[in-house]
Length: 280
Image (tube, rainbow, N blue to C red; front, side, top):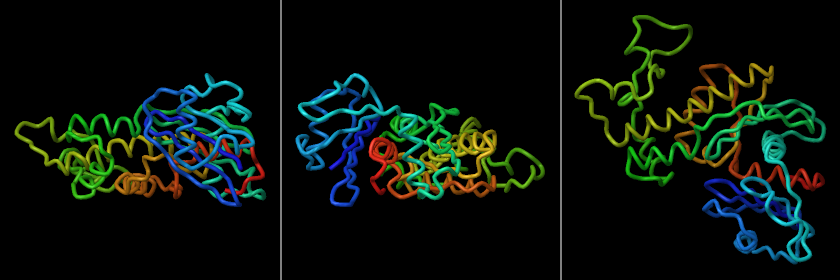
């Protein structure tokens, strides 16, 4: 049995490999990392610390953990490596295609962009815009930081109830951009007398966050001459965010891979880094 934990700002994610299968679970994060938290996380997945050969950890303040807890060794994995390796797995790279270079956009509380070229992982860029932005502004604009509620509202709303579209601000086309594409995020609200519904505000908020992440990743991929981009992180658990990412992908003609179980990518990457024989 092998396990890994990713101590994120919003979520603590864990994976375990046992009986030929990968098991995944998570707990909310409060930003405080202790040995008791490690035991709590493992217990939530019904994993006994004494049953582990070793435990891989990444994210947060993982370097402050001891090298052992009881008889279980602790392997500390650099977060850039864990992001890159997890992205490779969720992008479907196999032993035969492992050397194919890809870009991994880790959309967590903030967003990190990592180039993965075989076993070489490089931090390329990033942005402070991510899931934390969505939840923080959701609390201010919508009076909720519940991602499920924000997602449901966004799916019912029209972002151009708060945004200005291209058709609102220019008299003709710009390149191949469609007329309803965003020209100014939340720009309509700067005009006197404009009131946006809660649903439209949610849609505009999701659009803002998703667009920043997608454009950051696409620009980084082109700067690095990488044709495959995979987006990971719990943010893309939200269908509304996935819709925004897909639309930007279509506009810029660069496919963004949006895998299942994307929120566990970094924990999975830490596990695969220390146990390459594990099949994801």
